[in-house]
Amino acid sequence: MMPHTLIVLIGPTGVGKTELSLSIAEHFQTSIISADSRQLYADLKIGTAAPTPEQLARVTHYFVGTLQLTDYYSAAQYETDVLSKLEELFLNHETVLLTGGSMMYVDAICKGIDDIPTVDSETRELMLHRYEKEGLEKLCAELKLLDPEYYKIVDLKNPKRVIHALEICYMTGKTYTSFRTRTYKERPFRIIKIGLTRNREELYDRINRRVDIMMEEGLLEEARSVYPYKQLNALNTVGYKEIFNYLDGEWTLDFAIEKIKQNSRIYSRKQMTWFKRDNDITWFHPDQQQEIMKHIKNLIS
Image 1 (cartoon, helix red, strand yellow):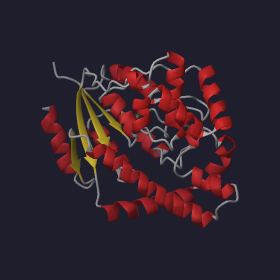
Image 2: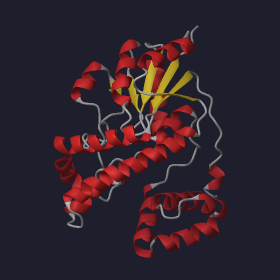
Image 3: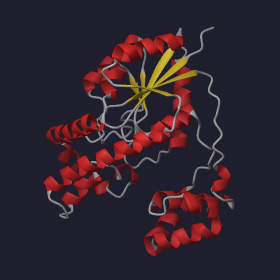
């Protein structure tokens, strides 16, 4: 029996994944699973460049617009949910397409995530309370004592990472490091990874134009509508946090728009650094659609 295939289409923000993913999905008469951690939120359509109603009508998408801003969601949860959905989809499809730029989410499906326990709400609230009262430096010092190994490698300026590691230490009585085994999980399907890339100038030009289009489509109004929730993790995101600075009266709108472009370009570089470490990805320019289809068919046949 032919093994089932998951085609994984990845690349930096603004590279052109959406249009190509629709063409590939239509060719294989299959569905698309989004690997974009922010397109999951129903209220963030414009700023996350979520598929339009027309695109959703062309191909069935999963994991788009399914969450509220206040919902807690993680890459581990995503792994569980997507594997369950794939099992269902593979009953009727030989091939399914996964596409997006959230590196952790892509890795969760292709490689698996370490079985780190889910943090209970009491521990989460306690640590957030301590962070607000005592500040990040104090928590970093505590992490150094409880898990010196993780302290050496964690981004100490990233409160989310520091807090999460401490939550696990508190909840389990073990180090966070002890849960980070980094073992690859075998998947019961074949994975074909296609990476899209453009030269830097071309990509940056597309990112800048995309931000202008988002503004024309109403990003300012969308950000204003979610402003009351700005402290939530879902909104700690390029495109929203810059406009919140404008709404807070700290920046002019023009400056905020320039910062969105700049931060999107920085994020695209981070994505490429992450993806370039993965030797399983075969790279193409988005215009090489025929070569991409040929490559996929050769591997499937």
